[in-house]
Length: 280
Image 1 (cartoon, rainbow, N blue to C red):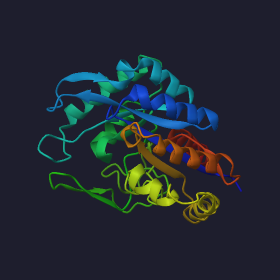
Image 2 (cartoon, rainbow, N blue to C red; image 1 turned 135 degrees about the vertical axis):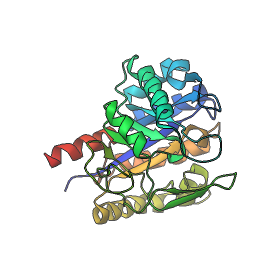
Image 3 (cartoon, rainbow, N blue to C red; image 1 turned 90 degrees about the horizontal axis):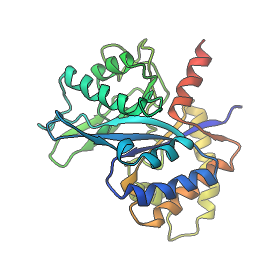
Image 4 (cartoon, helix red, strand yellow; image 1 turned 90 degrees about the vertical axis):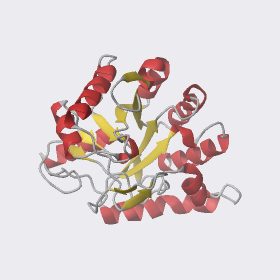
């Protein structure tokens, strides 16, 4: 049996000191011969009308180091100023074109995308296909989130955890697009998209970690075999901050994957490429 793909993805958003945190995470990935998918944020004004910079521009050395341990992707917050997730198609296109050019002009493929707050729609996918993206990862099946201003978001439908080709009219139903949708796993240590509330809940730093280190691989292996789905985990740079305790938790997880014959590290681009080759 082929090992189950484990894609560890980071939305890197400047919410902490990137220069302090990311080199430590890069060293962990190098230590365990792991690869990640690094979605780098591109910043705009509150009205989303003025481009103000990007992680790849302000931290070029870190971006290059991240590319050495995985794949660089595009990350944009499409949330509109009125608290909804709607945005005019021409504005979405302007933002995506600028962000994509920012990455590709620096030598990065930029063929994977994730919307901020897991925000994307059929228009987003139309534009991504026009820009030759291979994969979107802005779906978290069955996950609901209430934002601070009371807006409730369904991330996103009941499509399941297996990668699929979205429909033209809705990226949350199956269809025939060339682009592949790779959902964030519903069953993962990051169910709340929070290291502090999830990974620590699994590993419990205050307890003896070894029994859970033995239990976690077969648990994921069983789930992966039953769902025939890769495991796609979502991290943010701010979940690590300056607390090395969270890095300890991440390292234990990397070790569990690296030492198990049931898993292999993969980027979301690897997953998309593998699905395409099996369907040909």
